[in-house]
Image (tube, rainbow, N blue to C red):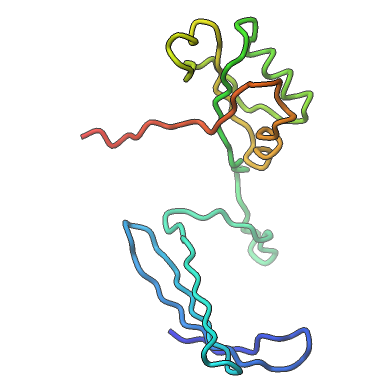
Length: 162
């Protein structure tokens, strides 16, 4: 499919641009390949490949005023992390309090198995922490944590047992 439109609205000059949209399936995911060719320079081409999630989207538009269509439940995007190499005196409450002081809202916090080496596992404790996804940069900031505390994304087990 080819689309034709004027791309330069800032200067008011019409630069005709032709775009070709190619859709293909790879491993069950839909990919959108965008090839753009400028009418001014035929030899210039831009290729881009974006992963498009075909299973689910979350709407970002406003409430439809005419029909009153709106969502019923607020869906919160979450991020889960493994906090490791904490002293054995650390508890769920101390981890939650620490994150609250850093202005990071904790959705859940549970004790977890340490991913340290076997000989070090007895000397440390670890936690599984779930927060709002938009706060993950704040949680992953090195200044948020004491020296040599290990923070990493939670590794979920693959459920494809056959």
